[in-house]
Length: 213
Image (cartoon, rainbow, N blue to C red; front, side, top):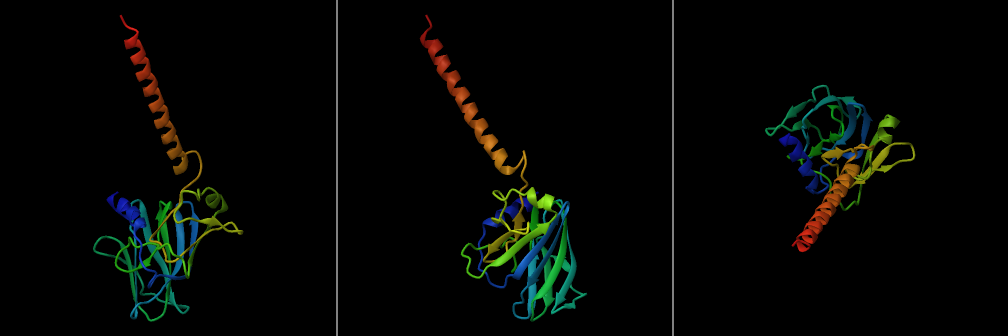
């Protein structure tokens, strides 16, 4: 659970858009699994990237290729602090595909550098595109007002976000009766109602004391 909170806290960290993934990051979303495809750019002859490791979730590399040639020796390891890590000797971008199973309301993406908490900067100049595709019923159920980053619905049913670097984590909120926004509204309403009741009771008690013998 501590890893989950640490990962979410990492959404607030901003880093330069250097050595991040290139082109579009594709996410195919389904029930209980997400399939991701992204290109990782090399730095000084090495592709190095890390991804958050969250509770109730597993991540497995399903393929890696360079210039259309498969890299069978590529694999995912773990860093000293338990994050997922990819390291491949290469002077060209490496296309990786991997599957996240379990909870898919939080989807880690690979980012370059030494910390999985790295995430987006906000001044978009040469944007990357995050594109979430998949089962229309699953996509239609997303609450884009409370998902991060801020997605918009594309004309073909997918949801997309243009960013200046690749985020370490996608937070996908579901709509419906128990969505985050609705729960927050309910809590605020309950607090206001409780305050009104306490104020009424206090005023009533004061009147009763003033009317006493």
